[in-house]
Every structure is written in C-alpha cells, then in structure tokens.
Amino acid sequence: MMIIIKKLAYTKGEVQKLKELFDIYIKTVIDIEKKVCCAGCDRHFECEELLLKQGSKQKNIWGGGIDLETKTIDMNSMVNIRPRDDNRSNEIQNPEKRKTYEELTKYYFQEIL
Image (cartoon, rainbow, N blue to C red; front, side, top):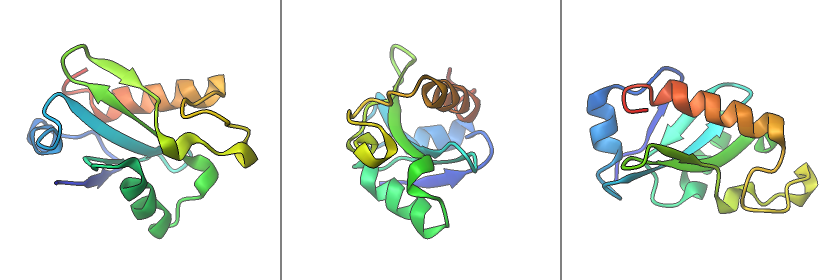
C-alpha cells in the first residue's frame, strides 16, 4: 500500500503507485480547507488519521475516490458520516463541499481526469 499526501497535483508515476491497491480505483481523502489530498489508502480512515495528525480539522476532511476506468469521481466514504457537521450520509451532502471536493480531485488527478 502506498499512501501519498500532497498539496500539488499527483504525477503519472505517483498515480501508478496509488492504483496498485485496487487497480482501477483510488481512494482519496481531502482537507477542503487546507487543500491537501491524501490518497492510496485501503480504508478512508487511514488517510483521515494522517491528515488529522498533520493538523487538519475533522469538519474539513471528506472522503471519496476515482474510478480510473470511467474517470468518475465519487464522494462516498464512511468518514463522511458526521451528524455534528450536518452530514448524515456516507455521501457528501452539502453542495458547496461537493463542488470543492470535485474541483480539488480534478486538480490533484489532472494527469488522468
């Protein structure tokens, strides 16, 4: 398993390493406030934990992933279930947060999206 945390876009070589775990899917967790992406985890909580250790705030951390075959971005993760942050689903429910998450994912993975 290769987890890579970045503020800049992932390179083609890094994307190759990130997809080793699931081949056609990369799990991502993004701090949408600090604009930091953690990717390549087996379970989203692993990336969430790393971002929290680096000073991210829970309310800014959202999870999802990319299907490399269809180039689809999803916002589905157990780390998203946070009623205290007004998110009662594993999907990111707030339209603004969804938009930010999608834009950041497109930036980080511009090599493949």
